[in-house]
Length: 243
Length: 293
Image 1: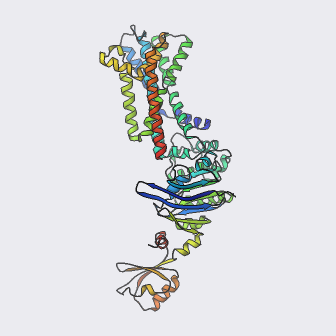
Image 2: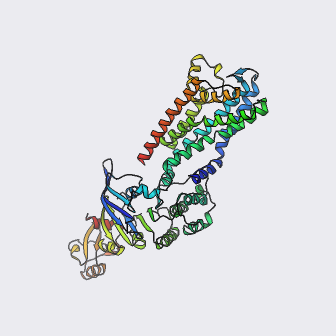
Image 3: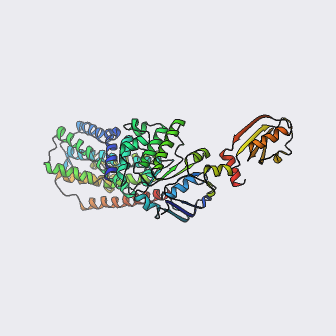
């Protein structure tokens, strides 16, 4: 399984589109967004500059993690996963490697946008808090990796791509990753607080602000994780049965 | 000695279609066996069950005395599937190294590359390979782990003539080392040339099982075809060696066990005929003969 992990990791690193969408775009967006407004205010318990840093890092992270859907869908229909199934590699191991690698794509955007925040707006945190931030922004993507696997195992490539984009776009905009939830109309604010993206970013805001995330937030995120895990398991079983 | 492959009374259907309909087949270790049949005969379905990719509706499938899933997990089986694609952003060498890492006792990388004729393509990206090259890479992936049983589903489908010959030469080297090979094909010639044993299947059943020569003999040898040039068809079926007569428009096609005797008698009969052709029976004719249609 280590060999398969390394094989897939190498392929991931060689994918230039992934880097553009998950690191380059969020960093540029961060620099542009924070260049025009007043950054001195506070939101989510931190400065606006820090809040947007976490938001855009999360935006890039979710984009990267969900891209596992397209990969799985293509590999499933092209027959590559079938080819792997007739080797001694455990089928469940393949899913695990795919999922873990998907979450790892969350790290470059968090580091990239973090550096931009530090350089551009002097967002300063103690080193251990920076490390903790990367850690929670990484592990917090587990529900999105599960959602990506569910989409990839159930939809063909021509549908997996739009489904991924739609999930990513609606979850990140409505979840308040690009614009603070504070400025949302009241109804939309309730929607935002129920979404996994918002509760994922909340973990980052809490670390940046030096306080604990709310119990409600953790519960919401765990609920989504359980739901997406069930969907991914069902989708995987369905695809294994038909092939 | 434990049989490499043992199928007993296997049935498998997809909706109303009976893809495999009571198939029984035993293969001893070291044999090279061709599974010969037209498209839709049940070859790919059979191979899928041998690999544990699908389960039979009834009957049993065993590889080396155990279930296909266990045999696959133990690294005893390698396979080349018809619809197995590769992934982008990886090279031929990397995918072979991956296969080697997955099996307990792999062959050296250099030997795999050489056997599959990929030595010069080792550092090429998989998505840059031509159809025939990709097919050779699939072969390399299947044999890298040095499995005891190799299953090949129409392995030469995307290959040109030169590649095809190189492929079969590679296969011969592999089977000479005492490995068991089962390959599916719809070319009678391929089956005859490269297999010790030819198993003919149609409509999901074994309809003939023997050496290539046996099968050829059973399929009614040759076809003698000519234009009737106005002559009647009466008595054609009485010519020596003729087993079946088919007339399309003005052209008669006689299936014959002894084409020499048939043609000699045709000439002596004083019938008018033009455009005489004698051909080996194609697979189509062979199947008609074997299935008694």
